[in-house]
Structure formats: structure tokens, C-alpha cells
Image 1: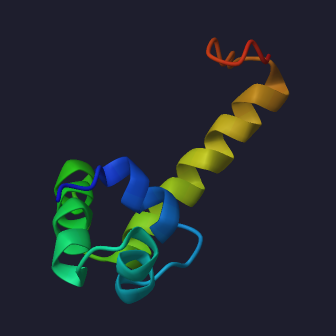
Image 2 (image 1 turned 30 degrees about the vertical axis):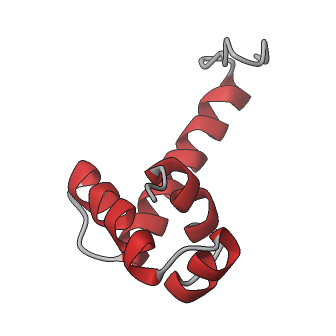
Length: 79
């Protein structure tokens, strides 16, 4: 069974572990490992901690840009 990296990332970033994510999705830990590896390759990162830091930094940048009025999220119509 394939699991989308986006789905695993959403569970991983707030502190989810491989075993907890696998259990929550009803899949094996090996099934969870592949999308995490894809995320590491995509963002050129070496660890889950680096992945979390990457997204925290990106989220902070978007929040700052949104606060400054220089970023508009067209999907939600928020400025």
C-alpha cells in the first residue's frame, strides 16, 4: 500500500514517530519509511529533525510574509 509523502509529513511534523504513524495509518513501519525518504531527498535533508526544522522555518516565513501583506494564499482567499 502506498502512502503519500504529504500525508506522512502531516503526521510526522507535530512529533509523530514511525511506529505511531504506521499504527495510525494501519500500515507497516516499512511502508511509512519510503515516503519519509522521499521527503528527505526532495528537500535534501538527512534526518526527521532537519525535516521538522525545514518546515518550521518555511511556516514562519510564510506567516511573516502574510503578516506583512506580501503573501496571498489564493487557495483560501486570505491575505
